[in-house]
Length: 229
Length: 286
Image 1 (cartoon, rainbow over the protein chains, first blue to last red):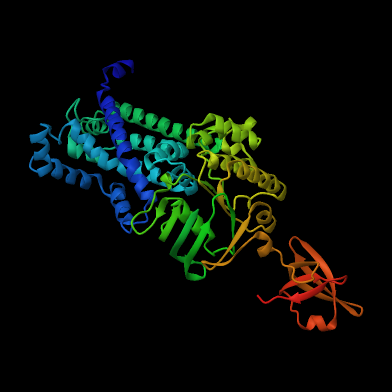
Image 2: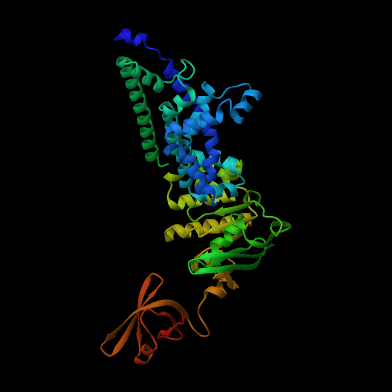
């Protein structure tokens, strides 16, 4: 047993967590203003933007992966631009995975934040404006601290969802060891070559980690409710 | 001097109506804004705060808050606003709520002492009672020494004892800071105690603008007293009739004659008044 464990490579897990951490960070920065806009606007365009951000939930990952691949490949204008200006390729490497993951996990960050912002007593925000505080200061000092459970849910679920993605990663990144071979892809390959022992161990690790993450969210949010947030 | 001349189309419960208000308020005045719900009182307050837009002009001293060319943001108006539901920052302690508006510890201490909140300064808002929350909200509104204090039914969610206590505190704050104040209120005793002017709004228009005494006192001519109430029932007892009337929170019985009951119907608004000994009862036109 221990022999098998010591032979096991943990690189795919590290890669998964690195990808998830970077994706979560980028999405947080993008999603706070986006979710704020969606929660406050009464524009007729709101359903349009809401549908667009929710699209990755319903689309098959292969569809999303295919379009991202087409859009970012070296034959596309975006791909050419990044290659020529920054000298970076956006597909079949880690950068491409981050870009793809940001699209794929966007709704999991935006939706809890939007729900949280919408649940805030509007008068509380107005009291902050009347006190002379800008929108940005109100979001940072009043809105975000008052939606801690939603904030926690958004961050953790985005992280967990990115760790768990498979289809998009495979389409955009392939399976290059130490570059794009994340845990879910590694399990797929073990099954393909019928190495069920390693597939079992990897899968069990994923199940346990995912469960612990979710458990911590629910415990945290339960405590927050008791405090009265 | 505050000059308000605004209009705005409102979609009220009774269909569309126009809020059309032309008002001048002197510095230091305490104005009560009264009128039925849906008459545009809260909207007027929100327009003054810059939380809703409107057409027209608002000018306070030499500063223009609203005209055709510009709308001054609520952040730049330097006002205080007390919400009916307190709207305290739930993530900050009592003291932090005050200091968030302005980092003036001395003023915060002073306000908390005036409202007997000093001992609660480190408590979080959700551990406070309604009356305590509204006092914090009042202190918070005073923290930037506002040119104009707006209060939207600040005491309507509180019990009568707490109301009286807070009325006293509002009064002493008004005396000390001399802030021009506009308060939405339905409570005649509150208006009488606090305000020196009452503006009555009905369907978006000002229908009455005078001192509380002129607006609120209902006695006419030689009447000793006069109450408005609702006629609940007329009961025949032996040869006389007794009218049961609800006035405020109380029910009263009044003896009425055969002649009088002919002009009365149950459920009607009535005025009960007396000149000498026997109270008289008159139906009111709704």
